[in-house]
Length: 375
Image (tube, rainbow, N blue to C red; front, side, top):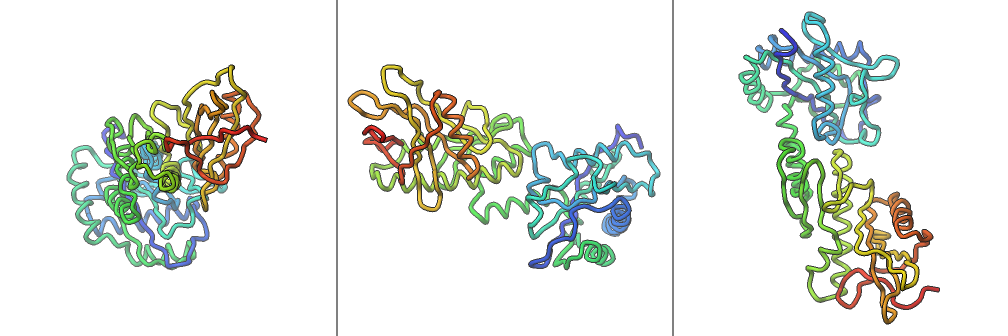
């Protein structure tokens, strides 16, 4: 079975934990991973005997779905690459990767602590299958795992003892099953538009995907990045009620922060159209400073419960009116400082932020700045 002729079929063992339970560790030692792999191989043989013609590769690590569902599927890609290097015949064609001196053999197989508290833990594996058998075995797995993919009693018992948890369920899923399950979860919390972008990044990264958020913000997946309509541009399409506009803008920024957090977890960058992605904030440049007017200043638009939703750079222009140069949108609390620094550097001014205490709109209902001099 030459490595070059093998096709990888990605599978996952999904562990649904009892409420309040957390595994005692996120990774398994080499010996533990080997023990689990032998149990998994027996389970899969019972479900689909043809798996004996494949090489089972298992990573002894517990992940969250956001870690596995990233562009290029790096966890499975790393697992497949490591498995192909192992000579045939080791452990009856079952290979397992666990920790040595506390470390997994490659960085992508190290679960991140930030995602360790979810109610479902996912243990990735691959079946490396001869090309001639791949399509048939893939079809059988899709059918059998959905219908009767519960892990065997010995496997579930081993997992509970080793990880120190109680399990509601332990079942095998194909990667397609995991994609479908995650889709349903995102739809359930009103994030179907985000899922359509993520699905494009995962499955058809060469193809653009356009959608609109639940609140009407335009979004597009394009060449590895999610491009988002600027909140100020969106604001220009809204109704005439200025107070309602300010309220709706706060809602848009709240929604945008949700999207940004999930896209970041899935390692999918977010940016304004044509802009280079910046970590944690969006920066929209409208104009350069005009030397005929005063030095630009920074103004913080604030909303209850959200803190600073936007930072506007403005000069006092003709007739004392504000001349808006740029807007920035912090997408998580720690991003405000870097955003202010970036704007201050761009306009060569001190990073002094003037709090407005509210969202300030101009006479046309656009994000603005005070017209009177600052004291």
